[in-house]
Length: 124
Image (cartoon, rainbow, N blue to C red; front, side, top):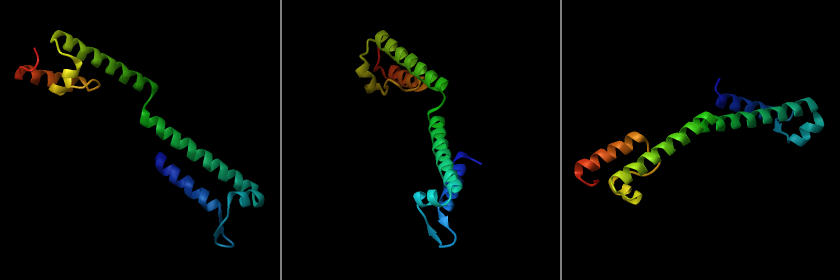
């Protein structure tokens, strides 16, 4: 079961807790609290579990702390590389956009753009 499937199941279960089988109507959490404490606690537990699973999804999208640190370090290294190339070729960082480079791009993209630029004679 995926996290998304678990969230959907918990949301369904939570809705079913609020469904009154005798009347066929949906009751409010407040009415549930008065009428059935155990079901109300289950309703709250489902709600907390859903929130926790959604938070886990967000963290997984962001990545681990180590992955974020690695990405920042790679970006810093690449920016330093691009600035060094600018200095060696007497280019202003603003001129990079003219040859198709922007700070923050991946190393392969930068190197390829520089090679093309050198072949065309745009860079010194």
